[in-house]
Image 1 (cartoon, rainbow, N blue to C red):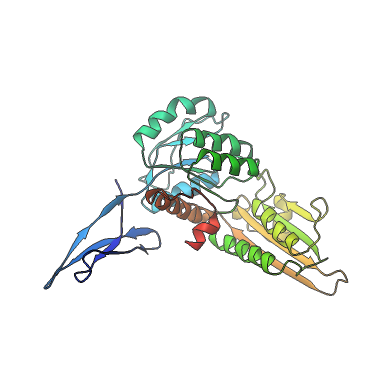
Image 2: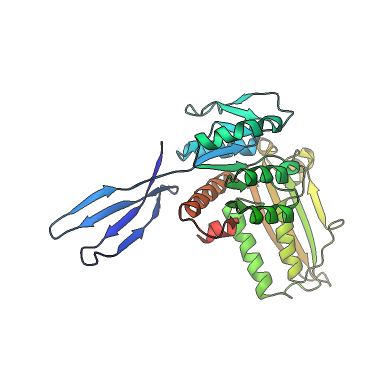
Amino acid sequence: MNFVLSYSLYDKNKTSRKYWHSFRQHSHTYVTKYLQWNKKKRTTILILCCTPQVMVNGLPGKMSSEVLKVVLERGLDVVPYSLTAESQPDLLFRLQQINHCPNITLLKPSQRDSEIKKIVRDYPRLIAVDYTHPDAVNSNALFYQTYQIPFVMGTTGGDREQLIQSTLQSNTYAVIAPNMGKQIVALQTMLDKMAQSFPHLFQNYRLQVTESHQQNKADTSGTAKEIIQSFIKMGAHFDVNTNLRMIRSPKEQQEELKIPTEYLSGHAFHTYRLTSPDNSVEIAFQHNVLGRNIYAQGTVDAVVFLWNKIQHKESKKLYNMMDVLME
């Protein structure tokens, strides 16, 4: 079993008060010590708090596999089960490059209801991470809500309004975000604040968006959708049918965007270009990501964040990555 530790100071001059100070060690492990003071010496006592048990759903998908890798690297407990597609032929999954990765049983939609009660009983500190398929977003969320399983929803697509409303109504702890990359979320936050502060900044400017992802990404980027809305709030004109270009062709990605061959199966290149009505001004925002690690790191940060909220019994239960960043 793994533990999270944190600092607590008991002051000899203020015996009725405890001062708690938590910090990250090696950027991910919470360490806390209790220091008891008296006149001549102090003694250090360790206070132990259990870490979450993480169920990574969507295996053997590439994004969920990357998240599983980060979970193991950070020393968190892995629940040896994963929700998968009905068409998945494999029954077990294991990350070959990590020796201590357990064998993970893959559960199809037709099997999961019969297994979940045992899983919840055996893993009482369970938090689910969802990187499945856009078509499964709402049904998977309903599954978590039904069994009161806290979850981090990284899958894009689905009916997002229904997703938010059903999570609120079910009173289930959750982090829901279309992008788990903290640096990209910081850009989203900045643009959202710009939209609030300068609502007419790009009045009548034309917005052209190009977004490139791996060939099998089924939907429009959720990050692009949110950033587009911020520019619209600032007065920009945008027509999804004529001003959005989705690139999914590996040939175009290599020839036009110069994406290395090894990242054709996992990348996110976005450009937002704003042009003034008379074409005399052009302003561009761009973020290019190769690989999936940035999202996996942010996802596990969201798991730790949610676990802390659960431990503190916070009344607010629905969060996004902006909340994780602000924390």
